[in-house]
Length: 321
Image (cartoon, rainbow, N blue to C red):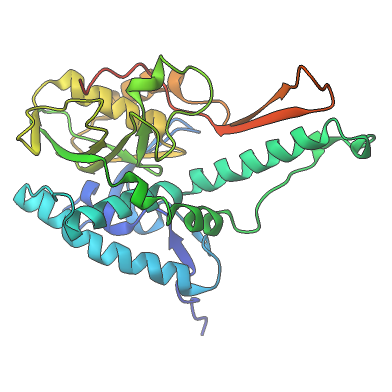
């Protein structure tokens, strides 16, 4: 008898989270829009989504650690959805939801591929002017990490304290159009610097104007934001009601543009609406995950600076004011 290896299928987006957007009552299926094929898949299995074999390695330590975080975080999600609960800083639930969001940013397939592309482009920039690389076609060489998810998680675990100055509000959707999510569900955005700083990345975790957005359910959306820059609803209200479909559509287009391969949603989103959102999001999707720019020294031609950064999502979002 063949025995399935324990925890071989490792999810980079937790199953409990995807079940909030399920297409049936038991939470086992979900609607999928695959952007590569531009194809709608109805009632696909949640268990098979946003996962890869041994994504975090065969050592179960990381998978077990993330599983513990998911178990605790799922209770906070449940309170938010059922009781319209908003965790307040510095409560354990606030820290837990923030940690879940930051880790979710860094544990996905997309983020791992971004790290690989940044490393690859950086190394090639370094060697393109090195005499030792003459005769080597660098376009045929790929440089990557042995295990990029492990590298990413090791880095962000020390970043969480830098994000604790972000305020949290829960957006409540009172329109007929529900929220969607994706295989890259955390959206990092910066409306403040989008036009002020058009080069490089503006969404580092400690940068002024950072926004971290995460759809919680079809009717709820978490927004961590820099309150020194943005005003979101009434200052005293932790819940912000959104009753304009145009605002919900903007956030859904943002989720589609931020997705890597798949968008997830329930039956309240029709195929026509999904295709319309994708058509609008398509122009905002970055062609490259990362860039490595070289700046030559004016004083010393043999000296240069290499600037490596991930490509931001920029769509002139007008939401928080």
